[in-house]
Image 1 (cartoon, rainbow, N blue to C red):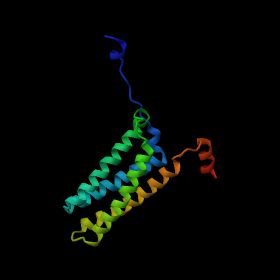
Image 2: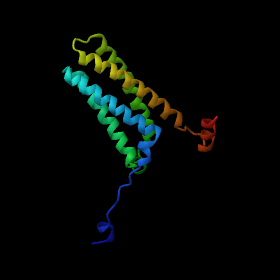
Image 3: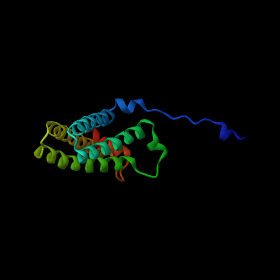
Amino acid sequence: MSDDHNRITSMEVDTTFIKSKRGILKVAEMVTLLVAFVCFAVASRPKYIAATVLEFVITSLLVLLYLFKLNKRLTFFFWPLIDVFNSIFAAVYFIVLSLLAVTTYTVTGTLVGGIVGLMSAGLLCVDSYVLFKNITFNRPRSETQNQNNT
């Protein structure tokens, strides 16, 4: 066998991402989504459960993508822009879903899940703003860094 088949590829783990502002924001999103899921599950609201689980899975996959630096290997997508679109759409969806849950609740779990869902929507809005601010569109990186520092 050749050396290519015998060689073990190692996966790099970026622990600084979890400690960064974006990493902490993503973990906070995951925590609020998990709490909202538990509240909706206790209240047995399947529509709300499905939405929170779906967004929790998507956010978890994005965290794993950044944590293992797979965004550097899978270059056929522009991952920051995908992350911004996910955050924007999820924020709008969770605002509507949470307001619906808060206004039509019959069980306390639905009310608490709706409130935590609104908190999650706020975190998603902040995440999309921070990411969009850092994306460069046809500008040199140095120009963008100078603009961010002022």
